[in-house]
Image 1 (cartoon, helix red, strand yellow):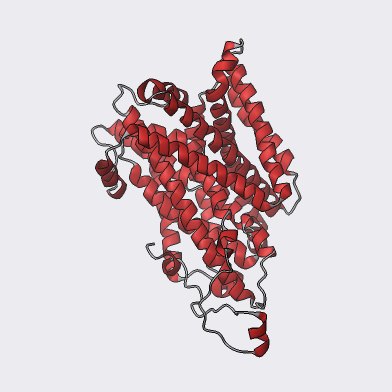
Image 2: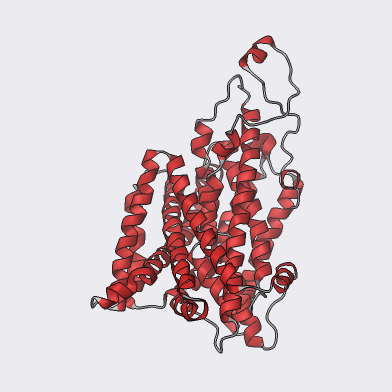
Length: 462
């Protein structure tokens, strides 16, 4: 996967951009390399950054804090390989949307039997529900960490403060969704700003903890699991699967194929009427978008583990609670560290919750061929999270469990994506190369194998 443009796809290499309408009228051939218009490539940035939000959502906070505090840098390699998988998967999702002009759910409904499509829809809805639960809980918890002390001081209980935080979060998510009414780029820019804030916050955390870079680099490159006892080994497998589920997210596999549609509909270039060339141009720019966005998410995820490894791994007990992590950071690293941690969690929850709602709408509309109001979708998805808060369940445990559920639903999104993008009847000349097909099925095999190990571990307490 080193050379993305050649490893993933063999896009037509002989494409040339017509220099001007006059050149077309003259019938002259060109040999100028394909280049964007002035600043053109920047106008294509956005879809992958919106999708990348799912890779740095509150579920990642939960699994990464547990992984770093319990096993130090040891599980950093999981993020590296998960990111490599994510780059390929998100590119294929975008490619399907660009080439066909349809979302992944729409393509599933069109090209598969009704029974298969219904089964895939059910799996997709399970993934969407688990996603919404994790992301909304994370946003509410981030709001609580920032403003909970003030609410507690005014006589509210912890549960009451969390419920108030959830209601405030709901209003903010509605405001983010409303930005889409001004144009898709306004929404994308807002999400990119939130991602940038998360990145800055973890840049501050890394500056404060002073990690052992050599040891971290070793654990990024050399895959290892915990040793010393069967219990720790099994726990590291559980967290590795949870981190995979938190990194390669099924709902944005569906969503990314929809995020590229607005640009596809407005894609015009003076003098260019060849749709194949226009799609190739868009694919090249989207590959850059995916590569930058996914690697940015990988760096933020890695910073989460590094921060937890340095700050918490020396404690008598691993930190298995986001609130405990927040309370512990203050005495260890100062109030700035605790504050930026809460800000990052809030930004993560707000952005990912908004993206989760969009994904849910794409799933239900695409599979069932209906129009579903996005604000109604938001109201419906609030209910499970409110119930969890009202019942007083541990948000971190719910977050980690949700990521494991997502890992189990991944094949239901990946397999249709690989089948569809491999068919020439669907993709024409853009169908996956043999190298891409092999890489894709290896990814599915790895995910299924990890899930099988986890099932055996849970069922038989191996």
